[in-house]
Amino acid sequence: HDPVVQDVLEVDDARRIASAAFYIRSETRNASGIYCAVFCLLAKQGARDWQRGEHIELQSLQDHHIFPKDYLKRHGIPTGDRTNTVVNRTLIADQTNNKIRSKAPADYLKTEVFTSDPALLLSAHFIGEDGLSSMRLAIEDRSDAGKASAQTAYDRFLASREAALLVKIREVCGVLPS
Image (cartoon, rainbow, N blue to C red; front, side, top):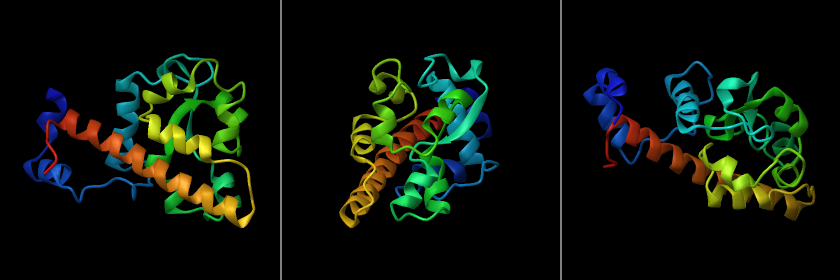
């Protein structure tokens, strides 16, 4: 565990973080402690920009919606807490974010946004194979079936990424899940 984190971690905080009821999906304010912690973990994990492959510390960064808000809105998920959750956010270069805009995740995974294997770059952003699989299922299809599929893919993505983030948060805080 990280000694700096341990110095400020209160016993009650440790119990809360260890609890099976602890979740971060409801965090949407970029000034919240959890929100800031997730973004610090991205830097600590060695996250790189998806297009340039450079460390995020070297970039002019934007707070990016992995499943873009406009994409989600087109597929029946209104803008709000569910789209703005920290679990759907990461840091990438502004140039990369501008290339993605409101594209379906499946579409931007196949474009010039990624200069190498997306799996390698996404893993440091706490997006594992399940999360990547969900992104690949998120296509641009506005039919009722397409909207349902996009919503399922998004829910699976959130569950997968939140689980990965919780493992790291607990590891850094030196607590085991209860």
